[in-house]
Length: 177
Image (cartoon, rainbow, N blue to C red; front, side, top):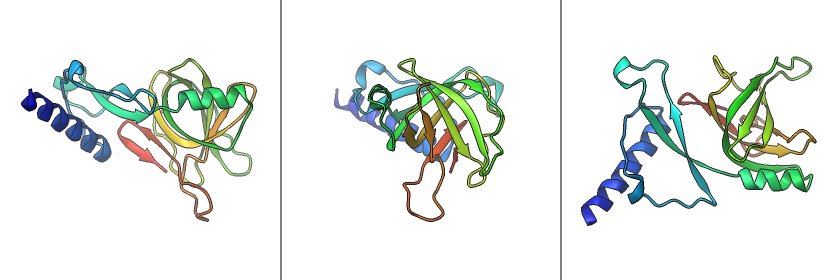
């Protein structure tokens, strides 16, 4: 039993290391041997199909992410803003860039609980997400602002003035900040 536990822990460490360095791994894990704190994290299965050999195109990569969906939902219900959040969502729509003042790449994510949020990613301070498409998964760490349409996630980049918490987006194994 101890060997199975050690193998499970080793597999999780390998997957986390691969996710951190953007390495694609094919890993089969026995989910019955894994424990998970659902209040703080969720497991997203991301199909990483671009830039992979045909032999592993259909194999998913499992990336653990913090899940603040409930926190976002509560902030929306209570019409609160300025809340630092981390989660992931599926791209529901890719919108035109906002080029007024500071430029922002804009897209709508649907969270795991069904709520949608607008992501306004400052592309004057951070690179734009390359080839973003509807249906793909984007992880985020940024600031939630209330809007009557679900809310906005912004500050998904570094702060050159060092006055605000640095945020980021993760997409297709790359971190944008």
